[in-house]
Image (spheres, rainbow, N blue to C red):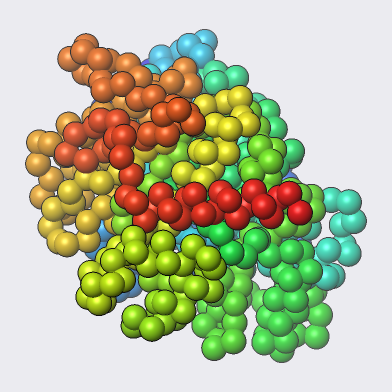
Length: 514
């Protein structure tokens, strides 16, 4: 087994995983600590070390709210279980799980990007254990990146400090630096640097959308998996912040801090800076997500929705999907039948009557109507993207819906529930999963790793028999794989969701033609 490996900065030693055929390397620095003068700068190369780096523990998580401080909170019960986990502004580390016995095996590689609304998240979350993926002959790399104000601050002085170069979106630049590290070093772990799949969920999936349209990331990966990433925004929605808008938020934050300059902001200690940014985010007049990605003109050169509608993405195979309870939110301001009708007329114009008919408006039963109104927005966005890709693209998208029954409460297939299944880590969860759940998790992990190997998710199950056939989305067959009690292709769609998809396609098409 590969227990000791030489990477570009020195020797690194890992430990046997629970399965001794797998070696786990944790806490390998892939960039210099983004502290001091490197705060709010693109990541720089890591320094060499002497001797052997014992990669036995995860690196500190990036600055964020302490996980698990409220054990009764939903995600604290699910996986944010350790409020004593180390946290630091020095956070740019990655982890590798490899099944290789030698460095010449050229195994496929999967790079994992965690979610957390661009505000939190970390590689040490227990559902992200890479062992089950590695057991399928795939190297799993999980990467850390800066979040919240440390990643997404923009400021006019920052912009002026590096004309023609990177001036923001440092979380994306951290991820890019990790991709580049993998390209340079993964062969030493038995990996194939020319067969890399990036995959992520929620903000991690949104990150992948950014990399898919950024010319700065071209050639750094060969396939991508977008889990609950949203795809293309629905109609009448706002694009990413512009650089100017993000700079104005940065100036407002400077004023909130009481600092006279950007340089003075850089002197604030990390803990205080995070706490102040959280206070700022909760001000009554603050933007909903003040510290998030924006169109900076260097890494993210255009709004990614507009880029994907024009099919200006890296033409590589993609898997994309969502859970059935992904952001099932009521439209803003809708609180009764009158406000619903007003919303429909404003949002859909001459198609408002059709929309109200589909949600059963005439019944007058507001509770049942809202159950139809609150559809998973991620499904709408993914389907719009799949449509445009099938219409003008030349690389496939394999779409899916995750709707497994989640025992233990009434949360249903909540946002992030598919993580337990993709990583096949159900045994770590508190939920009383049954045999059907373990069967589904085994198959989903198979599909994901098959895709990483070849760009096609299909293949045999553990018994050697073919798993249900997964077809890519086409205009002739606009269908997705459905992961419920079992896996199967689904050829029907919620009529309200179909309406929203068709309306958004028409809206975006008209807007693009203007």
